[in-house]
Every structure is written in structure tokens, then in C-alpha cells.
Amino acid sequence: MIKIYSKSPRAIEIEDVQKWADEWTQDMFPEYFELSRKSKRDSIISRFAEELGEAAKEMRKYDGRKYKGKEESSLDNIGEELSDMFIYLIRLYSLYDLNMWSELQRVIEKLETRRENAQKQRDTTNVRTSGSEV
Image 1 (cartoon, rainbow, N blue to C red):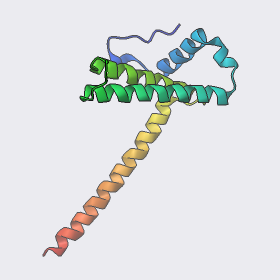
Image 2 (tube, rainbow, N blue to C red; image 1 turned 135 degrees about the vertical axis):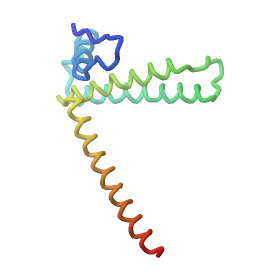
Image 3 (spheres, rainbow, N blue to C red; image 1 turned 45 degrees about the horizontal axis):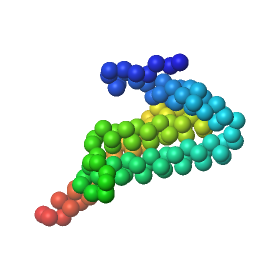
Image 4 (spheres, rainbow, N blue to C red; image 1 turned 180 degrees about the vertical axis):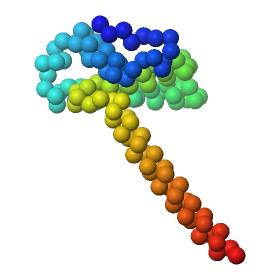
């Protein structure tokens, strides 16, 4: 069993969470591993969507929307629902043998390039605009 609990969130590695999620799923739902990838995917996505709905409801309650007979939400409730979503998202990465950290790094690099290009575009536009004011 992988121990991923830590007092410091930074001490937990994404790869360890992926491994833990796989082990937890295997322990709790051994029949899951006998399903086709399509069935696994559909199961994970439907549960992710359910958790997304629960998170959205908690956020609306927290922001003041009233629900008949329901208690108010808290940041703990929102955090729990977002964490549930995170676990299902991790399971999708594992289903396709993707390393979440590697994929995040790749996307961050792509987004940083977009930011740099947008800044260059703004700088070029500012130079042209300020030059025409003379």
C-alpha cells in the first residue's frame, strides 16, 4: 500500500497519488479491472460528471443560493467535492497510461509560450500605437 498522506501538501507527488488511486480502485472494485477500457472510461466520466455537479451545487450554496431543507455549504465541502473530481481525473490519466505530471508540464510549457507570444504582440502594438501619437 502506498502511503501518500502528509502534513505538507507539497510532499505528495502526483505519481504517488496516481498509484494510490489505482490501488484503491483495485481494492474496492476488483471487477473494474475486468471491464473494457470503453466501459472504464464511461464509468469514470459519469462519476466525474456527478462530482462536478456536486461541486457546483456546493459552490452555489456557499455563494448564497438557498436550497430547501439543505444546510449551508462550507469551503470544506467544496474542497471535498473538488478532490473527488481530482481522483476521477487521475483515474482517467491512469486508464490511458498517461503520467499526469508530464502532461501538466507539457501544457504549462504550451501556455507559457502563448503568454510570451501575447506579451510580444502587446509590446509590438504598444510600440506602433505610441509611435503614431507623435
